[in-house]
Amino acid sequence: MNPGTMGANALPSFPLEPPWMEPYTLVQLGGAAQYGKLGDVSMLPTFRLITPFGKWAEAIFEGAFVEAWWSSEQTRREWGLTRTQGVAKADIRFGFKVLLADAGEDLPKLAFRAITKSTTGKDLESRRFVDGPAYLLEVLLGQRIHAKHGVTIDVFSSVAYWIWQQQETGQNDAMHWAVSVQVQPVERLSLGVEARGYIGWQRNDKPVVVGLRAGVLITDVFELGATVNAGFVDAPRLEGRLDLRFRLPSLVPLLFARDPLP
Image (cartoon, rainbow, N blue to C red; front, top):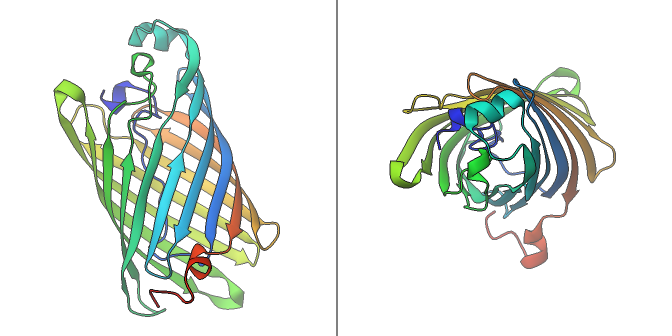
């Protein structure tokens, strides 16, 4: 169940997000297509829901319900697969983020994020997903910089403890890391670059992912985003993502007369 001897979706690294909360509920629907170094192909419909509760906390629900996959001849031979293609149940994750420190606009923000990977991911025999729980405990640090001519620059990073269960092998532990820079050169356009990965104690669990993202805010509530990720070291592959992001009103004003966490 070592991630380096399985596909890139078995235990992926986690995309980074800023430590602060956005003033809206995010509903994201999209799809990902992946092409591995040996010619393996997979496709996943993806989703994400982030609900902020005022300035200080948010709930996170994300993942993919299914994955369609096709493996190359070399992969089938090396992994000893009994099937060459199929549809596997994918992973669903849920968690929360809490803002720990906000000393004003001129100083960085500090937050804590915890995410649990459920046991929904299946098809271990085909090396698709790890059917076991996993946990991410992460500290985020970041700052939003307002430059000249209305340009906004977000710089943030994180370090985390990434844990997963491996049946009779026991628990595996890794240090997860991520850095990101996002720029908003004009009001409705955002561009970003990100690098992330984790380093575990086993032989092949040192994946690194570098990604580029562009987002265009079509209306005040609808954003179209595209991402290209390249995986290195373990389970190398290229990934293209297309996401529809909806910025809906925050649930807090709908549930409470006023923000309970001013």
